[in-house]
Image (cartoon, rainbow, N blue to C red; front, side):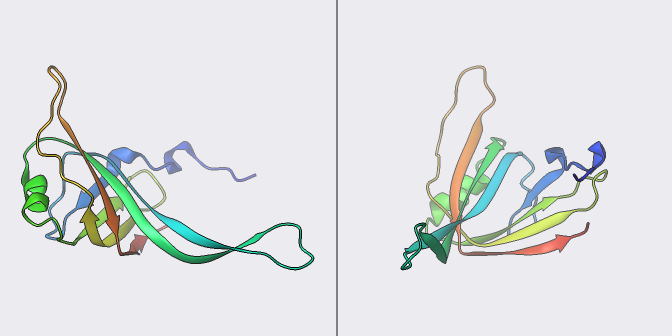
Amino acid sequence: MANFESNDIINGLYGFIYDENGQELQSTQEFEASVEFEKAEIKQAGRFMTSHKVTGGKGKGSLKMLKVDSRLQKKIADNPTGKYNFLGKLADPTARGEEAVMFMGVSFDSVPLLGYKLGDPVEVELNFTFDSFRYDTYIA
């Protein structure tokens, strides 16, 4: 069984997202991105269980921000077919290291124009796809 110190757990408080110009999206509250694998089922003579072969993948994600301004929404609305690069970084100073992932060819699924609930902070959620990614930093 692997043991670890509690300080080794990365705290999301130290998560950052940067746009293609290197500007931090300072009001980011949540960020998630993943690759969903496409698989083909493979049947083989004499085998009861079906095997699977990865045949491709799709990059998907979401970004939730507190609404400070409409800079990003306006950029998306002005160019709905635009593709962007975003850098996601986790850099907790008490953890064992930091990591960063560059998401390339980010394309947003929609753009929220206006929404609010009286008495609540306004949040904006943006879903997106991406064409590729690479780990930029990993220190362990």
